[in-house]
Structures are given as C-alpha cells and as structure tokens.
Image (cartoon, rainbow, N blue to C red):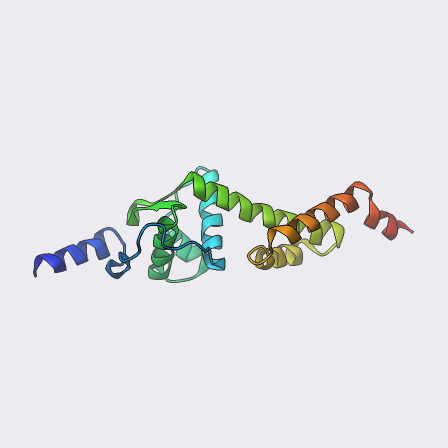
Length: 163
C-alpha cells in the first residue's frame, strides 16, 4: 500500500469521514436543506439533554445510511454550525445553536397555531408543523404568531365552541 492509500483508509475508517468529501471549502455552503435542518435540530435537542450524539445516532433516528449522515454533517461543519470529528462525536457551535433555536421556534409557533387556534389534533398538528417549518418565511410566521396570540388571549375559538 502506498502512503496516499494509507491516508485515505485512515480518513475513511478511523475517522469515519468519507475521503472524497474533503473538497468542501469553508463557508462554501450557505443554505440549509430540510434534512440539514432536521439534523441540526436533533443535534441541538440531544446536546441540550446533556447527551452525546454521533453520526450513527442520527442515522438510526432517521433510518438512513451512515455515509449519508456523514456527508450531511460535513456540510453542517462547513457552514460552521457544528464541529464534526468523525467517530469522536458532534459538538454544536454558537451559530448552530442560534440556527437550531430559530427552527424550533418556527415549529413551536406553527404547532401552537394548528393545535390551539385551529384545534387540530396534536399529532397531526405536530406532523404538519414539522413539514412547514422548513419552507415558511419569517414574515408569514410573524403574522401567524401574532394572530395565534390574539386568538388565544381573547379566547376566540373557545367562546365559539361554547355557544
């Protein structure tokens, strides 16, 4: 085996990183996909619970291959949202924490609107909030939040149901 093969094998098997993915340059990716947002949210919530998280945990949670997760984690690291060192685990950066909080806030605003204002069953409301949180823009979200707060504060839907 030559030196290059040894390095490739070390990166592939010892660190758990796909060798061919080292072509990403720092900061080259700027947009989070739905999947990346889901990963970041899971990482944040797991670390918030004072638990360690590794790529295999994410693969198991979302029922996808570990190489796919590793590729996504490299992309998150490239965006400075996490620190990923292969099998050593994942750490979240302050930028990652801030982004995860935004995603969770979107989810919570939508869930509250669907469940408390529209009175949609919690599991259905939660499932739909998970889907919509990735595509809704901040302007629309703010309108939904304000409308939800108004309805809840004024018991609009409860009064309607009691008539």
